Length: 479
Image (cartoon, rainbow, N blue to C red; front, top):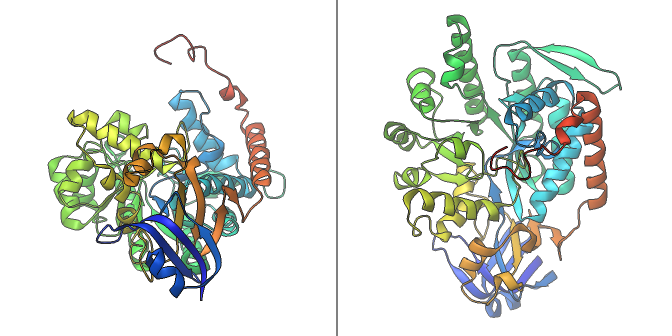
């Protein structure tokens, strides 16, 4: 007997044949998909404890976000367009102004945003700015993972080291008083491995870890003396070694022209487990390297990095590279809504090529479903609606003015839908949202805790001035 069934829906399977089943059913037993097909055939054969009427809904695999940052949910838009101040804030918050309440509250907030937008799986880097990672102790990663466990979605928490040189100063606030600690690269690696051993693959595969190492770009390498340069390279190799030893994804944030060539020539860290984010302005030679080594790419079309340079995602995919879409998290000026990022991605590349036929909607949808699952090494379990795969399923309510007329559902979902159109979310076979009501957490409590954690962070940093609207917000063409 099935535990859950969704009937009478338009089923967008994203299976190898890319079947779209009109008046279809998805039947779920436990945490797996038991059957997918026409309602007239599947419903009688799979009686279920709970049946949802999916009429006028499009049912899809849960969306996947392959690049985002934990912590960013509580500092979004701070600085009002001043990127330098925003980066400085990240560095301070993620080292000396955050506690476990901050990381738990932010994970719950960002996770709830994902849930309500139909994003059932996502990478979250445990920090950000210029690769400032909160891995001085395990308790911060534990706080993030505990919040996600309660919420019920799927996560890949990226842990790693802060950019050298070490040591870095971090502050522990767990007693209510600030206690500074000095943190070495070795200590950060110990923290990462402890989290991997304790959490990776737990809770039915919902909690996962991957390794991160700061991307070595010319501005860092050119400013380093020989000893520091060698240490930077040693640290990158060690993080990659740990990822390979544990059989997990190895990700790096902020690749751009020259970084892949340097990694190939000097580091030996590129391979099928590597997931490189942003990846702007790669040369033809660098694209060829990624294709030959089966390196995966996290393209963030809504990110600032995609303004500074262009991710040659079309050329990469034409070369056979797996490219998936990431949100880059909600800060400084984005959201966790992957519908938004699909639409942004289509326009981004069409504008470059001056061609509205570039990046068809179906390819954009692949980049947040099955291709994203491949980028995470999880395509045997998620990314499509197929018998035996994990039951990560979303239903989009098509009965909306902006989604009518009720025809061409593939176009409606990709070109016009947004996260607020997601009605129902199932992860690992568990119903987490129905009628847009989250069932696993108290939404008001999540918002209250996020506000409290933010107020505490602002008190500790003394950065409340960054909340003020800048004088050039109105009336100017530039900040």
